[in-house]
Image (cartoon, rainbow, N blue to C red; front, side, top):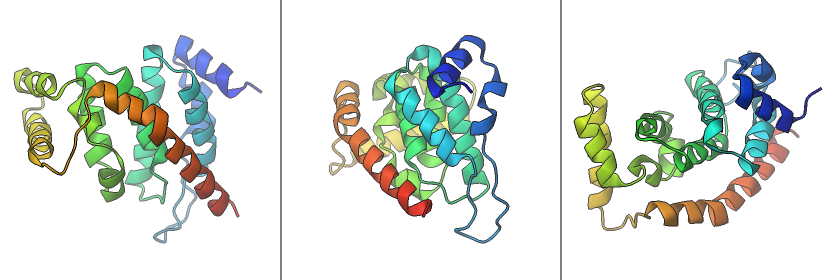
Length: 195
């Protein structure tokens, strides 16, 4: 059996999705609200946290694959903790290209109110909010979505109570503080859910 690090390395080299079979969203068959869960969630959690220890731009395909599996859970109305989505979004943000703004916006605003609250708006600001808005204004595709993203950025920037962090400050904040909160909360959540 391959280690998580070997799976990550092999996927980075081959992008063979068969390597990720045990990490795919797998519905538990429940239908009642609050009972729907992903049978592979804890396996995926281990993969995400292993990836976080050593990731690069070359891991963006894996990060996006992991985000898509999280979204399958949200679409199935599974009761999933939000931490993996936030952590994957941060890894994508750290190595983002402008076109990744769509995925980051989806994480913040396309996965329910928990994500809207927990996921930081700085991810949607992109590399720089003015550059992001210019990219969106100049992109002839997705005009409606581009307007929605610009509107969200402008709204947050106009709110004096939102002290937005620049990219460098935000990355430092996440890597020195928020990751500890995520790890602690995830450990408590896993202990609670598995008992």
